[in-house]
Length: 335
Image 1: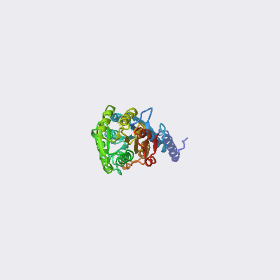
Image 2: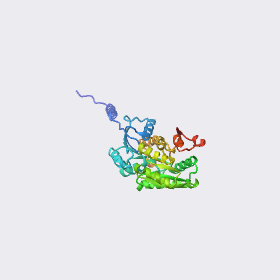
Image 3: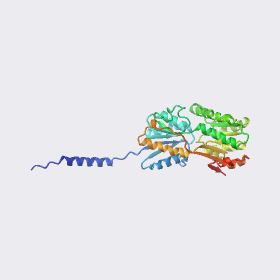
């Protein structure tokens, strides 16, 4: 007896069902992000990681479930950037998130294909990393910081607080060669215009590390500086940061900075971009890239939130009276 032929439509339905089941059983690829931070460590992630994690949560990402993040920390040692970035490239991460010139330089040299999201680069166009802020080109995009505007604002605030401010020493830390030297030179160039308008003379001083702090403060005093502008790297250990602030206070030199880390360590005031918010916004770029956007087409953006902090304890120790008009503008007052 002949077997009945199976209708072709039934065969098609069965094959389709098998295909759907097979597809459903395929594990969904979880994106992997490489994140290099100059601040914090595994036990104390710091504001960079805290902000980034908040940004991921805002977009519905849950670490370990629908996204993986490989965190690496330089712990204040900029020379670790190349090896940490190379490690992440070897892991074939889908996106690299880096902050500062050291991280970007290492990332650019390590890969031309993996998308790179920058967070705190001062001048990515002038440094030759991207074509323009509006259309970066290549595999780099992210967030820059407004050094020019912020530098002038810090100097203006110091002038309001420190009577008869005429000379300010900018203290740079690190080996001033290559990209770091270029960034320092840019900072000085950008602050010269507001300094002239405020009739303040700028002096540049360089320290290699904590061993130079005391001699640098002495040099500032010898140069008749009335105040200091700190350019200690974000990854500077808190003990070293406090050491510098204590030496400055001992020499009656108020310190202005772009980081509230300095003010918390004993500096007089800080005015700068909100680090946590900037890293939170880095997650926006990561989300867009994972959904198919190309870094070349994503405009590089500037900070939106800024933070002004005053340390009243330091002001009192230096016998300085902070005008009420300045206090009213502060986002945070340390008492």
